[in-house]
Length: 168
Image (cartoon, rainbow, N blue to C red):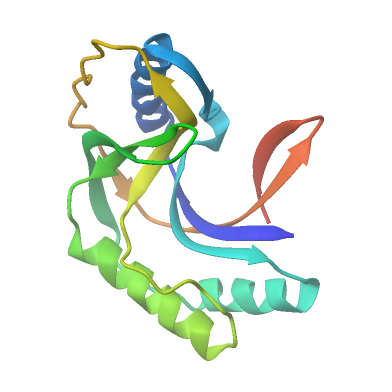
């Protein structure tokens, strides 16, 4: 299974993100845009994992204790890629989010997981391989905030050609 640990959003936050994505999509020549139900914040990407590894990940998550905290949408941006950019919405810097990511990363590595070690850049992917029309004006990002109380182990799979994420 292709796995990742994520923060899933409340309905209101997902709707705000979908509105930004739709604005971007309307200004795009092409792109692969994230479905509403797949909008999430990845904490740690794990990749392909077998059943024993999945059980270890579940145990790490079950042992993870953190105070609830608030995240706020902040800005839109993109990662430059050949063939089209990856567009995203970034979040205001948050020390509780950083601490949660660092804790999960450290404990998963201690349990034998090989995880790409790079600076954590919390963002919500809106679209991949996106080519924007000339004259595009970045949309305003509403200052939507939401409370984080739990994290989820998620799997990524293709069902009838459509990318789908589901809790494990």
